[in-house]
Image 1 (spheres, one colour):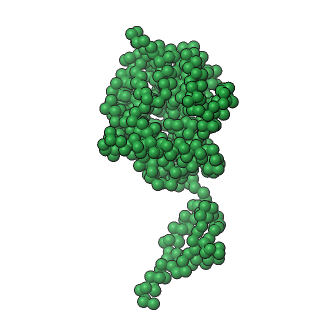
Image 2: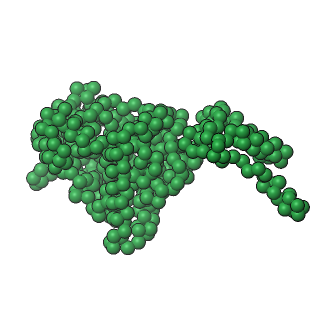
Image 3: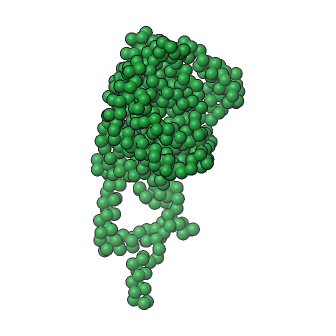
Length: 474
């Protein structure tokens, strides 16, 4: 389906999500299990010093960002020497054109695709379908999302928003499966269908979790065999990866690969760690005849030159989503684009323009849980605050709120106005309070507070009055 940017509708979609009982059930199951799994995995004896490991991982990613141009050229030289073709894409449209051109050059008709957030970002599936090409998602979660005509709601777990019963109904309605609530039966049924897609495909497409500059390999870490099937069975293989995926050395990769599975799925290591470094050689028993790697910028170079460069260190584990109290209650679709949760609230405005995602920097309680969970210690709360400041500088705030803040600032700078305002508020809240002594409804913007909680009336005497009485001894 075509993906539209709907981030400015966050408030409306969030309200709808909170009232969706099935969604709340699915989110509660998924996020709770993920948070507990990460805590267990990071507490194991093998992780002798989690803080030191995170610091090492952070240093590796930030160092790679500083050296980004040189490392990308090093990666290109290494992988090209083994027969792969490297293409550069400045934006989403150019990336999609590259893939379509490759498909036409090799007379491709059918495509199988592994999990890739970068291709979600470019809306590749829609572009391929418009070009008359058949494309099938092969990650089980992504496949279910595709069948449902939806988009993923999580970086790692695309169908965290769906219950088992909903998945069953999709398989029954779309694929003709005999009704069954057994995850094993549903997985077996889907595997049988997807196996034929793998065998018939002319092209496979993957994303990449890491690009190793030292060796010229693209790496995926997965729990399903579909990634390997996409890269080895079709005669043409395409990798689409954001340029920020680059890491300098195998040693840095060794650090990061200890944290990505633990943070994302609570595992010491995923079932598959697959390194891809070129098309099949004459002596190889399998592999593609042609391999292309598309390095996607799409705004990343611009972000790298700003105070928000740290956001590019994200390794897409989803830990900040799982632990975020906002995401836990509204899910991923409420954020209105590819990236959701705390990191999405930063990345979406940066990639699409802050005016196109104005509510997202405010979609956070700033509790700091995201920073605590992040395996590379990205300071997401700080960036959200700065983005809020950027919105104010652009004048992207409600007029009533701006007027109210200015009035508050003026009042706070004048002792006389402060005293008058305090007295007026005391009288107003005394008149508005109920039988229990609490204020249940406030007017205007202040009503946002009393929608969810009561407002205590002002004290009979202000602090200034009490202080004067104390000083005078009365």
